[in-house]
Length: 289
Image (cartoon, rainbow, N blue to C red; front, side, top):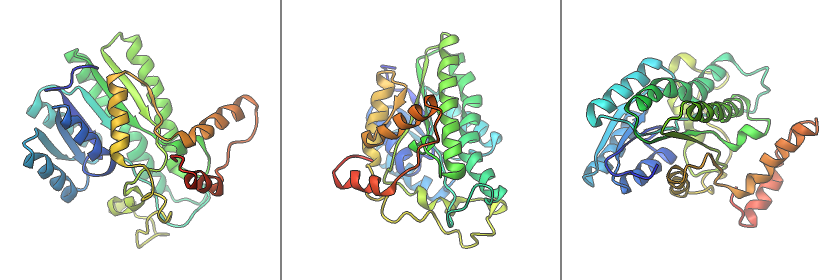
C-alpha cells in the first residue's frame, strides 16, 4: 500500500497505548482515523487530541467481543468516511490475579481473554474484509499478536495470541488466493510501554473473576514501563504496511524465542520455557525485549 492521504484507518483499542500511537502515525500520513475502544473517557480524550489538530477523526465506543458492536463500527466508519482501507485489530486484554494453572483458571477468564484477543480479531475480519474487497482499492490489515504466542505459561493470553498468528497466516493466504489488493501483517511484540497490565479495569461485570474480586491487574512490576515506546512500534507497523511485510517483530531480543519454538517442534522436544533472569539480563545489556 503506497497511497495514504485521504484513506481511512480503523484501529481497535485505539484510545491508548499502541492503538493510539498507530492512529497518530496514520494521521501524520494525512489519513482519516477511526478510533474504536471500550473505554469511553479515554476514547473522548483521544478524539479531542486529533480534533485540536484539525485531523479527521471519529471515535466509536466498541466492544470487540460482540459482532453487533463490530458491525456498528463498520457502519459508522463508512457513514463518515466512505471506505475503510486499513484495519488494525489491536484491542487486547490479559487476565490479572495470581499465577494459576490452566486447569484451575475459571471459564470467565477464558471467555474474556479469548473473546477480546481472538474472537475480536476474527469478528473484525468477518465484518471488514468483505467491505474492503468490495471497494477494491489497496488496503492492509494488521492483527496484533504477541511473542507470548511462542512460549508456554501465558494461559489464555498466550493461547489467544498463538491463534491470532495462525489466523493472520490463513488470512494472508486467502487474500492472495482471492488476488485482492489487500495485504495482511501480524504484529508480534515483546514488552511495550502500555497499560495492558491494567486491563482488568475493562472486564465486563458478567465475566468477573470471583478469585480476583478486587480486579487486581497483572503483577509484573515495571517490566512494561521499561518496554519499547508505542511510537516506535507504530513506525514499524507503518513501514510494514507501506512495504507489504507480513511478520512484524519489533524486539530483536525475542528472536531466539521464536527460533527455539520452531526448533523444538522439528526436534520433537518439549516447549521453550521463559527464563525471566535471561530476559532481565538481555534488558540490562540494552537489547530490546
